Structure formats: structure tokens, C-alpha cells
Image (cartoon, rainbow, N blue to C red):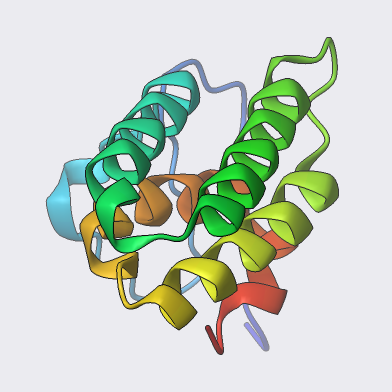
Length: 124
């Protein structure tokens, strides 16, 4: 036989991994579940903790950006590009104030949820 060919019949499972060659799956194929609303709440709590290090203008701007993120994820069809752009501005603001570290966990969850839409945030 030349080349690889295989036929796959009907499959029913939560996770199916098909491969024409070797395949190594680490972690048993678990699903990644991200609580987007929880991540936004964690980010809001991190922002509240960082408030003493922020000027009033920075606090107001960060709050407005976070409100925009919250509205974008709670819409009937979450607007990932809008969330990504707004999060990028928020991260820049928090980095400039030196307080971004407190929000890393929540930001990581949101970036994972955003997927390719978060490409603009990689350099931040």
C-alpha cells in the first residue's frame, strides 16, 4: 500500500483523537473549562487590591476598561476581538503602574478563552 489511508466509522464520545500516524496525548484528553465571568470577577478584585498604587485617573480608566470587558463577555454573542483589544489596553495600564502581576491568573484564563483573538496580547 502506498501512502496512508484509513476510514473512520461512526464515533460517539466526548473526546475523540484520530491520527494517521503516531499520536501522543498527555493528560488523558481532558477538556479545559474556563469560567470567563469568574475570571472577570477575579480581575476586578485584583484591580481593587491594586487601587492604592493607581492614580484616580488610572483607577477610573481601568474600571471603565473592565466594565467594557464585562459587557463584551456577557453579550448574547461574546465579542472576543473587543475583549482582546480592551484587555490589551488594561494590561498596558496595569504594567505602566507596576501592578499587573496581581492579575496574572485571571488574565491567563481570559487569554486562554480568547484563543487566536488574543494574539495581539502576546507581546504584553
